[in-house]
Length: 354
Ligand SMILES: [Zn+2]
Image (cartoon, rainbow, N blue to C red; front, side, top):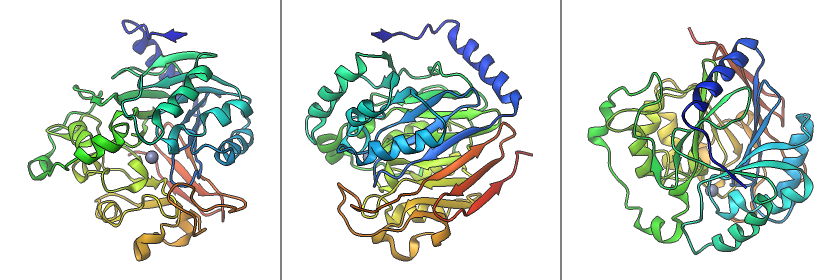
């Protein structure tokens, strides 16, 4: 069943509720789960509702990891499942997960736009699972109906918002020097990346973004000539840190205080992306889900890296790694947040907005 969002009054209602939860003082918990260079990010709102962005790879390994984190977070179901796009490192684990854990609502960008990389098969496996729950088509500017925090869609189906979010819209002086990338190759082989459902997530003054694998030229459109997103506290580094994403004109405009990169041992973590991030004025720290083998000294000190395993392949990540670890963020309505590396308990506090 597909549910259309009632646009006329719904955003106001959702925002009012989200503001109420922000006043409750309870935190938003975010768990960045290691799926070996794919994405799986679990949100638990102050209202106790859950939203999972992507499911990692097929085969059960990543679904098992997600269920373990969900149970540790006290969940009995996933209330909202957002699939950013249908590549195997994001949607591959969906069927495996659905066999292990109940999922209630499904959010996606609509039909797939790519016929390679197993996308049609992945989508065909997803549809019967989706039919057992509610389907919400991600539409630009929509607020997802989850309680306790605000999730606003800013990209989907190769489109981006055209008007600034509240408080955003400043002219971006970097745009005149921006260089487009030739994404023709990406169009042919990976048209799904630019279809990514991208969201701005907020609780009170705390703001972060998850743009999936949104690519360079779409990022430009979100930030030029005006920054439609505004500034953020936390940047989930798009596309695992590959250098077809994290366009400096956008990342500079977002001005994040902290970045989290969901790279694998051999996937993402491009040197150019490390350089973009480390040159950002205002960025205090970068946390990594994995040591990036090809990035050498560009890697952060080990305290900031959740998983140190090496080997494996781009597709599988490190096999038989044993216990894997998570980057956990607890965010509060005053804009303050704590980041924890569950491997070694390394924890850092980032203060409230002034
Ligand atoms: Zn990906």
